[in-house]
Image (cartoon, rainbow, N blue to C red):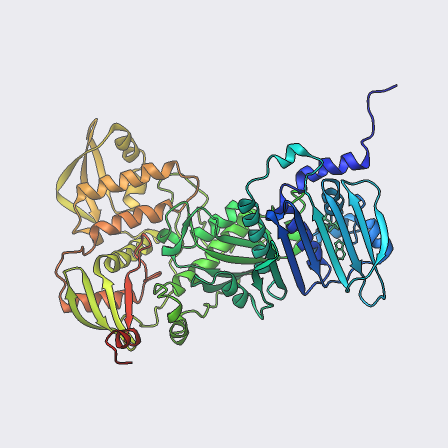
Amino acid sequence: MGKIRRLSDDLANQIAAGEVVERPASVVKELLENALDAGATRVRVDVEQGGVVLVRVADDGEGMGEEDARLSVERHATSKLHTIEDLARIATFGFRGEALPSIASVSRLTLTTRARGTPAGFEIALDGGGAPRARPAGCAEGTIVEVKELFFNVPARRKFLKSTATESAHVGEVVMLAALGRPDVTFTLARDGKVSREYLRAASHDERVRQVFADEVLQECRGERGPMRILAFLSAPERARAGAVALHVFVNGRPVENRQLARAVAQAYGSVLEPGRYPVGAVYLELPAAEVDVNVHPQKSEVRFQDARAVHDAVTRELYPALAKVFALPAFGPASRPWDRQQGLSSPPSSPSSPLSPHGYVDPGAPASGYPDSTPLAPSILPPTLFDGAGFYRRLTFLAQARATYLVCEGDDGLYILDQHAAAERVTFDRLRRAFASRTVAMQRLLVPEMVDLSPAEIAAIEGAPDELAALGLEARAVGPTRVAVHGVPQVLHRASPARLLRDVVAEVTRAAGRPFGGAMDLVLATMACHGSIRAGDAVSPDEARALLAALDGVDFAGHCPHGRPVVTRLSFGELEQRVGRS
Ligand SMILES: Nc1ncnc2c1ncn2[C@@H]1O[C@H](COP(=O)(O)OP(=O)(O)OP(=O)(O)O)[C@@H](O)[C@H]1O
Ligand SMILES: [Mg+2]
């Protein structure tokens, strides 16, 4: 008698459930996906005690006949795929034929269903797997799946469940993601008998995104590269969060967890987002099914791209000009929406799409981005864009400088107050960045070299990269084990202290070396820009103020300093009138 024995179906299902069913929210996710695959237009999710006691998902989809209903809870039974070729063009959420049997094996499951256009329904019930009990049942067209006492027969898994509040929050997140993915479907979530969220059928992604992110002002951006399409709704940089918790990425309608994609989105903000910070919002990528592998993980929350680098690169490059344009002014809050439109600031720029290169989406004409490179001083910078700020800043009338810090200006619809340092920094940064990208940062030689004391490691960093420093418009040579002489600084930064400039650049560069992803150069340039610009406390003449306003019009992300702070704030005449009681 050999030692190998075939697992029983129930045991095999329970083992599979370990991968698919982690917690009540995973049950909700699988049942929601089944409902959507069945063509539902309305889905209602009910949970009791965070879903631990009960998860019920009811849909108005196509339903099932008796034989299908019986088969649906059997392992490897699916209507969504029949050949391996089907997998390459799969358009449904499900295809593995294992969600229902897995869930059934670790809970008490009842499925009630009636196929569209048929007179009668059926009910299938299982307790921790086993043989299904079937009987006729009266019900509406569509399907209701009830999952009670999750993990009642797997105490080890039950122990891992968190508090009701935590499980309930996970359920809320899953429903929200499904709603973001499918604006055309109405989703209702009820907790312990009370409706807690309702996303009514929306006409567009834009409308659904606004239902979901009611408290955020998100700007719409679009891009296209080869056969890939990008639609994004993203927050201003100052609303960014540490970690990608509030940035939801969808690939062909499927919510995915993909760090690199989230980073590609964050990198499209250039320097205005610090590393590790991510905007709030939703990003939808559409690309041919054959270029995406969804069969990576049983929960299907991961995808693999045929050419991941090309996809990430396209996301960053396509979103950059769109974001630079929409954030030429910071978002002033929901009240500013109609005004934004009037200015044409929320209309996405048309970006020329390039033919698909043999490697994927790489634009053959574009310079190598170097973004994924983390080597210090690598030219990881985006090409300058041809953004024309539509003359917005130039049209403001400069009124006065306040507190030697703010420039007070009058616009058509209100008063605009600029932070003079932030504004000047943005302009200097943009000039430096363009010059750096075209390798034309002009250097001003110092008559008398300035001595700077640094650590041996910092000196080594400088000695190891003379060409890179020259590209930044800096020249420095070691004159001792802990001392360098600065011989030249970038011309645009002639007002800066060479010693402080060099120290900060070297600090930024050494810090960048350990960073897992690029964008380092933008931060170095941002640090440099900070030095050469008008500061708070500097007197600014009306001519200088007007020149600064004019310069802002030619600049990407003019509404934000290179570190992401807003440059300008507005007090609309409407608000002003309200305050003084005129309206
Ligand atoms: N709500 C529903 N309405 C109509 N048919 C359904 C519904 N839920 C499941 N089915 C049918 O039952 C089958 C099995 O569902 P199950 O979730 O187990 O597998 P799947 O969706 O095919 O693949 P996966 O395991 O990847 O989710 C489906 O292929 C579908 O035909
Ligand atoms: Mg399924």
